[in-house]
Amino acid sequence: MRISRKHFALALAPVLLAGVLSAPAAAAAAPTCTAPVASTTQPGYLVADPACELNGTPFTATPESVVHTGIRDGAAYRIEVPKAWNGQLVLYAHGYRGTGTTVYVDSPALRAHYIARGFAWAASSYQTNGYDVGQGVRDSYALIGLFREVTGRAARSVYMTGASMGGHITAVAIEEYPRAFVGAMPVCGVLGDAELFDYFLDANVTAAALADVDIEFPRAPDAGYIDRWRGQVQQILPALGVTTGRPPALTAAGRTWSDVVERRSGGERPGFAGAFAYWNAAPSSAPTPDLPFLFGLYPGLTGGTARIAAGNVTDNRFTLYRSTDRLLPTAAEWRLNADVLRVARTARPSRGLDGVPRVDGRPPVPVLSMHDVGDLFVPFSMEQVYARRALSNGRGRLFVSRAVRGVGHCDFTAPELQRGFDDLVTWVRGGHRPGGDAILNPRVVAAADFGCRYTVGERAVFGAACPAKRAAGRER
Image (cartoon, rainbow, N blue to C red):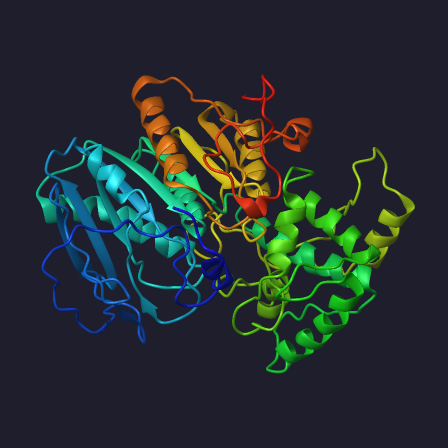
């Protein structure tokens, strides 16, 4: 199901439904919704009633299923089991929900599809909000035992899936608990761990350098830093030709910035012009709702800690920024690299579940992923980072990535998600690796038909229709 413009504009707000919207449940007698209750594990946190959606709509079983809801160890959970259960379970990990102190559970977009195919599913609210991937992994993994306890039956096989930050959780979970899962399907996922925050850094420091505006990266931002950053951004925007609320009228510096962001987010590819306009016309969220979206993601606002790590996890000391694909950098590219603010990390992705957990790229089971090529929140480059790591670890054959021609975050149609899950299941059961896109081949990525093979339904804002005849041989 497709994420609307309204949802991505609220991407960092505490009430974010990151990932994809839940499928409607069949009509049933509405339960009485209860007020959020105090967490038993996280002081100051509240846990919302898992039997109801945030808008008060009841979460009820379909005629073909039985549901179980509850709160365990400070996390709400939902479990749904089809009456004709095939013995298999899907764990769904939701995405980032801001830094609010109320946690809530929701249902996966493929809820109806899972039930129709005989799969049970389970989801957790996690005990915390924020970018707490480790807690998401722990609470998601705990669902396997909780499922057995609540239903009285053990799943014979378990799939892991998640959207956005839930994709990060998925990638870490299968490496942390390699024997627990048979397959995984991260979508729009943060598969490059802290490299996501490097991308946020890169977008902002190159914008400042091209606009000739001096900026800072405070290790411990003081109370006045947000206003100082806001003032600096207000100097950067006219120099680039970027204005919130309408497509940018880019200056020469702005066009160079677009070229840099395109290469840092996945390389030259179709639809990028529409994606760049789409995200720059969108407002950020609190505490900078008056700024264009990417400028509200500057890691300097949190000292590079993502509000979860023990120090700054971003680093661009050795990053070579390019605005062209020439063999050697141009004089303008050398000037940009000389002018850009350089930042050194003080912390790295964690080898455990604290801080920002590292994704090693060692999938122990088949992984089928999909990503919007125009997503500039969690960029398409996250797929490429994971693909390179998997190849370097000799696990490339266990990873399949599919490009979707959308510009939003988690902008998937139901048929795209359904096909992906069905192909993953077939892969797990029969061992035949399904098709994907050659995302590490720059010529393939830049081709006019890139993303056409697995896109179902055109998005008008993408700005480029698939050619009538798709080129052959682009499936890896």
